[in-house]
Image 1: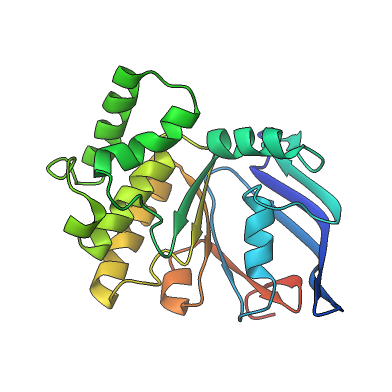
Image 2: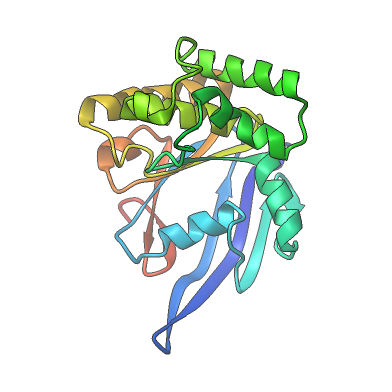
Length: 228
């Protein structure tokens, strides 16, 4: 039987803010199977960003367990988490997070540099990823020369160039107009439906969440099925 991509049990995380303890996560359970498209919603301060940071190996829980592709990564040290993050997880952010004075091609090559991939192979794979996003004519363009939708396509190409196990998208349409948002969601739909990419998406927009196969809601540090 295929292992879940994500399997977390009883995740808890507490922060101290101005001397007051804030329970960001209160015993989260979540399983995501290969090829699923899952949306997570929730108001500001609900804990959804904390959950995303832990799932993306950017933070660690106080307690509970996290298995990624069947591997228990709960207690890995920061260096091991960084290596795992670069190899297994692709990130797409609201603000694109592209390097400003760097070409689209060089932006997409960046995670391959950290992965130790040689120059020619980096160039080939980054070119293919951008062509796949419909940006074969914009390899040399810097972010300032691209529209918001094109910048997000570059970001998606960068997220996928390492062939990650999981794509984490944090408000990927937050800085885009309605038409461009629909275009980007169509890209994610195709990646999930036709290529089997496992996607976990955080959004506050119901129209965006509707693209997912299931929607969960973080409320007061707990994870609930939408409508519960």
